Image (tube, rainbow, N blue to C red; front, side):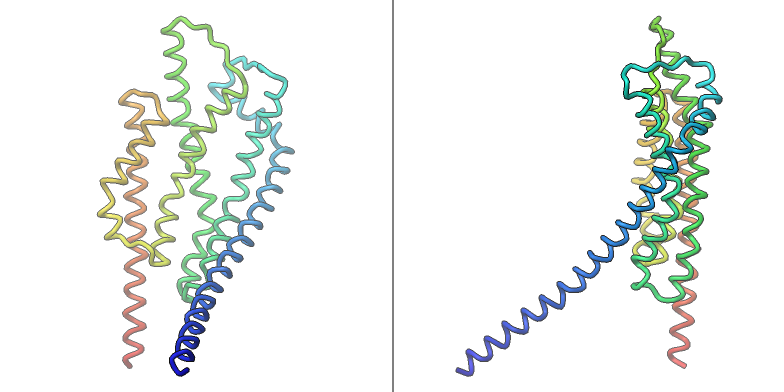
Amino acid sequence: MANEKTDRSAASGKGLLREEGLMPLLEHLGELRKRLIYVMIVLTAGLVLGLTVAQPAYNFLMSQPPADTLKLHTFSLWDGIGMYMKIALVIALVITLPFTAYQLWAFVKPALRPIEQRSTLKYVPFALIMFLIGLAFSYFVVFPLAFGFTRTIAQQLHLEETYGIVQYFTFLFSILIPISLLFELPLALMFLTAIRIINPQRLRKMRKLAYFILAAIGVMVTPPDFISDVLVIIPLVALYELSLFLSDIVYKKQQAADAKLAAAGEA
């Protein structure tokens, strides 16, 4: 009988531990779900706003080179709507980005100390700034290179250039969005350093792999010629080195704060 009671008690204890372990997981998943719903609501609102300003945005893009020298065509009845939706989606992404960064911060906030909460919150506004810098770099530097190369190849093959509006904007945004998101790398690595997931030592060990990945991305989004590749890869590598430098600053501040807390505890 005693053994049976012990077994029941042990089984009950294990069940309780499983429930206690399961509850925090369910709470975290519920919190994550709530944050994602908030982001989707703002993204939807941004999409509505994007549709209202899609026409001025389209007029601006078409007034800039190389679009100002092109005569774009539609190949289906849905092409105009598809173009509006692509522009609206990019506008919605720009609007939603800082809010998404804030929701990410709010999700990890309970696990951070007050000093870490304050230090990571200041990264949120810079998410939009870095994205816009990446947008400008990709639009004024990378896109003209890629588009000019494709036109040169078409001319060498004696092809008649007929561009569809959907194909043009798909090509444009397939370059702009990935590079603009890559410009979030410094903030992402600083944030991960601030919440103690990574550190500069680990980033230095990953340097060769990071260079390879960035070079591969640079080659994929640029024409296959050496000059264009270099013009894109060098800024991306510099971006990683900047990320490493900023991560090192955050890490040293953490070490100094930890030493100060340890000294105060001993006193």
